[in-house]
Length: 190
Image (cartoon, rainbow, N blue to C red):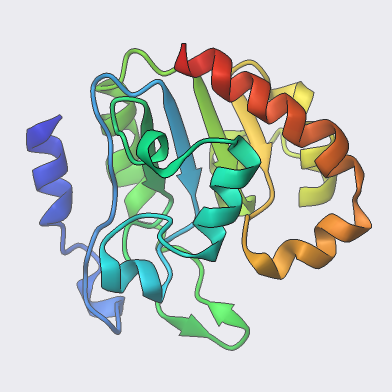
C-alpha cells in the first residue's frame, strides 16, 4: 500500500487540466474497514492537503457519528475521491472530478484493502461509477432506496452545506437513512 500511495501522490496524468496543479489527496491502509468514495477535493482541501477538511467533511462526520480521530485513521476509514485533485471552479461550483483517477487507481487501492466491510458512496459521481447502472433515475431516488445497495454500498447525497435545502425537503433522510448509516458504520468499525 505504501508504494501505491507514493505512486498516486506523484501522479501527473491530468496535470495540464488542473488550474491549481496536481495534489492528489487520498488516504488508505491495508487495514481499512470503511471506504468513503467522494467526489473530488475542493479548494480548501487542496490547500490543506487533508481530505474532507471543510464543512462537507464536518457534515459527513456528523452524519456518520464519528469523531475526527476515527475519521482520519486510515486503518479504520479510507478516503478515496473519484478525482484525487482539485478540478477547479466551474460556472456553478467546482468542476466535476477528473475522469482519469477512478479507472487508473481505484481497483488497485481496493485490491490492497481486504478488510473493507462498507463502502460509502457520497454523491452522484461515486454512485454512477460503483453502482454499475443500478442507480435510480436521480440521486434522491437512489438515496431513498439505499437498502437496495446494502450490504456492500451505502449511498449518500453530497454532504455539502448546499444540500441543506435538499435535506429540508427530504425529511426521511434524517429520520431513516442517517440512523441506518450510523448503525452500519459502527458495525463495520467493530
